[in-house]
Length: 286
Image 1 (cartoon, helix red, strand yellow):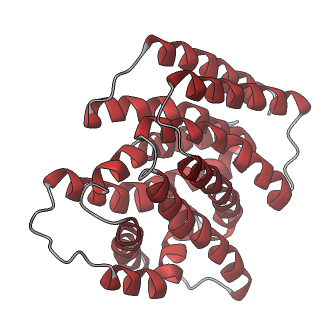
Image 2 (cartoon, rainbow, N blue to C red):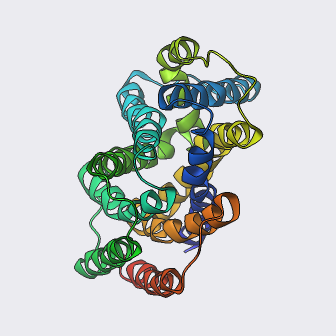
């Protein structure tokens, strides 16, 4: 019981941090190209990870962990940041944020495939209802339609769910912050050259919001958030704690309203209430 409570608490902190990722990415894209943003956020986070690993004298992962770390790196260090940056060039941040509500199904599915978890049938029912509520909300908003943007977001959800589930498995052996740290270092030989090759030709015109967005996704979205999130998935179960992601679109929209001056409608508040109920029921039957 204690592990479950700790898991949900850590997961909630991580989810809250992640909720600001897409608005911050949208702000960063006003000054940086998607490839540079993907490489820079990973490179900066890798520097923080290296300091923490060295300062706390963490042992090197074994050979059997390297394959799983590569999956985590491809999913959450490279795939999700790059695909969402591409999507946000074609759709509004509000339109992209609601796709995040589909992450619990992706995470739970890979948790079953990779972790051997077996949630009860009612869990899947409420998970699907929550995802349907998010999808209905997305359709009701009438955001700018773009097949490229929507497909990029769907792909981002798939690879991110895989990375979340694989990282949760590794957390049992390596620890939460250690998993994302080693995944960042594993991707550094690719991400650092990518950053240097795509460095902006002129830096001076880039405004403060873009720099702040880059700082947020590098420090919080790419490092600190994962330390809490992976610990939550490990302690409370990937499928059940993953349902907290159903709340992420609405926290994200709140951040988008504050940071990007996007309107918050009564429809969003009503849909949020439905999703909260689905999360509670999914947890009850997980």
